[in-house]
Length: 241
Image 1 (cartoon, rainbow, N blue to C red):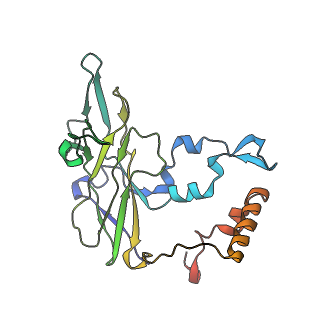
Image 2: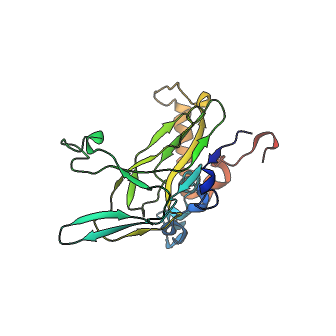
Image 3: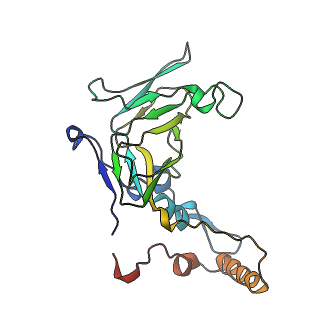
């Protein structure tokens, strides 16, 4: 079975939080949300929150999370409106470095005008089997984070250095602390040969329209039909565990 490996310098092993399956990093806003709203929906079934939405749960659990290696905090001066990043001066490397604003066109009109791009320095190198790449994404549905990471895909079967994480700080300027272990980036490996490259866009046939109507009716009138019949993510072929 294919395996992902996370490698750090020997002097850091055991000294920084390790990458773990993304399902272990579900945010508090999601964990604390009740499954039911305490009121019926339009069809008379229990009104459910996003906590009960299995597609949301499944996508948040994909892959692994690489966490921040050290505490990071901001120092804010309300007089000058200046905000600076700080971390332990004994840290063996700077966990944050700036990018040049011109790299995202911050000096021109557009979505990043006036922004200061930054990057988290990632101490973990990723090794994947031949033919495998990984997507590096902002931790999915972690709306509580005060930054937003740029996404990218890397052929980690060929690259022998860590992938750093470019990001924008999205929170208003204020004093804020992110502890070591905070989700930094979500890593989702994929087999390049398995990517679907062919597509067809067409009108439904009469039979397909009937299938859509039947499924739509069941979706809104049968409780838990998605979990019972339409969720296949956790099937195991050939007895694999």
